[in-house]
Amino acid sequence: MELKQIEGKNLIYDGLEDSYYNEHTFKLNNGDEIKFSPLNILKLKELQKIEEVLYSCPNIRKSSITHELSSYKNEDNLSVSFKETDKYIIIISLGELQPGRYRISIEKVFSKSV
Image (cartoon, rainbow, N blue to C red):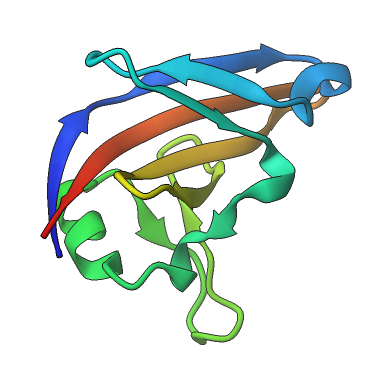
């Protein structure tokens, strides 16, 4: 499987905690619609193609030394996770940006080709 970047950074949510955990929807440039909730995405370290993704996302860094405890953060120090569909891998940063202010951004979207 080969990954091809098709979308860049895109702000999805910036607001209070009350709507942060809701399902969020965004459209890709090709019209496909992606839905996700912060509760149904996976930690970036669980992604099989993590090295290829990290190479394409220089703003994402590993924030822990041991693999078991490792997590990844973006330039705003938000956690980085991913959602995988049949056609796409979506890299998502999310978390509390400031006290009481939550943000969700799409870092990159990759299409999967065989």
